[in-house]
Length: 365
Image 1 (cartoon, helix red, strand yellow):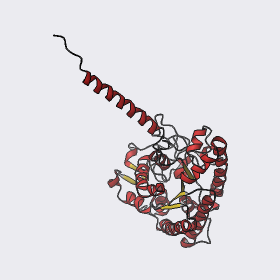
Image 2: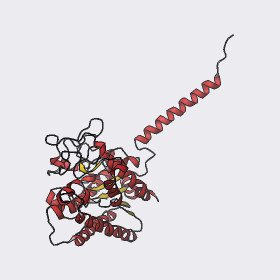
Image 3: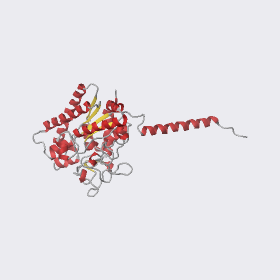
Image 4: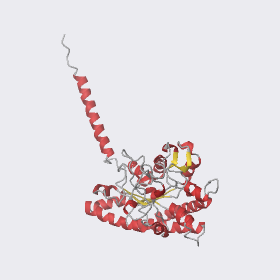
């Protein structure tokens, strides 16, 4: 007896195949940052926490474009200039926004037009809000980063027109992350501001940081996030330098950080009232990071007082290198990669917190 073709089954299979193709196409578009973008671009200013390699292009010893930096970066595990074993916060945020997987350095020789249209980082490792800080470190100042931003707008305008520039200014996310180097290096290590006590130095930083935000808004930015200062006195290098024989957290460092955070939060609120068409958000990461440092096991870490690179006590930048510095056996056990910068795993946890609590606010119309 001849079996009749099962047309309904064939139709179901055909439908399933079409659905599968659509899923693949939509997934590919999502991966490329297509229609799922929550913002047209991410534009970043600041220091080594958010520098993806701008310092590679300038004459400074503060670099991270050599092993073991990049120890877990991508498939090739190569150093890019990111002060980390892998990705940094702005990479994770750009990905969460559906823009792109990695946020490039503005000074990268490999930068393409599409990179410009979806955002870049102007950040420079070692810089700060205090005008003394970038001069002492021979890095790009915050004011120079703002000048680079003006050049960036001209390049976007030449590539895609005024409408694209206006879209980036109105809908793009602007993030600023600096201040730690001011406290750790300029104020404490170099003692370059002897006339300032903790409170007055925090006020100096607030003054310059608020002026930067004001200038950025006047340049056209409408959605701006200021990332607060971490408990800088608890990072491994500052424990070693200022934490005594037991390497405890340096209270002085943290006093300035807390005073700065409180003052900057108020100034961001004032600036938002002064600029009614803006969304200005202060991202307070101090408490969350302190909890990670004090209770590392809760977050999946076993070590939070030493870095993975070398002894973990002082190595950072040129001191953390593949010639004289070994790497710990299990990077994922460590909160810190070197004596100053967190690991990719720690950055991912921090970024998830920041995105849920703060970034979503910037996306609301």
